[in-house]
Image 1: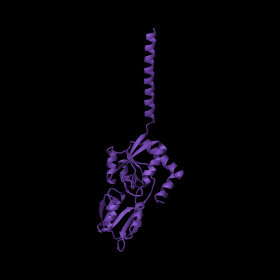
Image 2: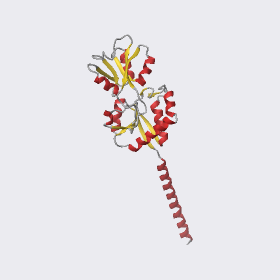
Image 3: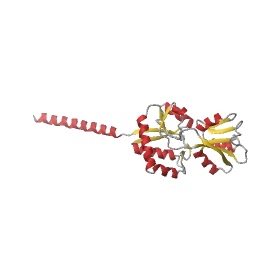
Image 4: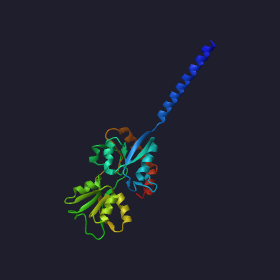
Length: 252
């Protein structure tokens, strides 16, 4: 009888341990946060760029981190050339894009967007001393970043030739080296380059035809998450977080 009771107690001990371990595993699994692989092109200061320690930072990065805390998700950053972002999203290599990407009707055919969080315009830049203006663009070579709304704008200008570059900085350098006649960039970025280059000047500005910068997700796959992000964006604008980030990155 004693042997039986000892054996019974032994079995109960291990059953209890198994049950406790199972419960612990269930709780751990429940506590795990959704991880979003965020794609961006870190060549677009002040929105996304590499800092002195070679880490990706910028307005978009800090804003998404604030959103992540609001809705309880984690994020990993993935640096991809701008024109490769949507293909990477469609291929399942990343889960979302936040890279100063303008929401356009053309892009909506393949991706879903959150509410816009920042609006900008197309800024036309020339070298000082040239007579280029918005009525004299036919026959001109226009530097733009590949895959942007600015490239689409340049392609619509009759008689002009769009010269795409892998980054807006490359386009600016091409202008300084007389390899293109003018550059079209996003205004939020362009004014920063003008501060750093006394030989350049703006000569025209216009709406870029988009809804504004938005976060992109693969088509039809993240409806609930997009809704949560939209709510978080409104809260961050209401509580002053968004305003503080605008000031920090000189985007006011």
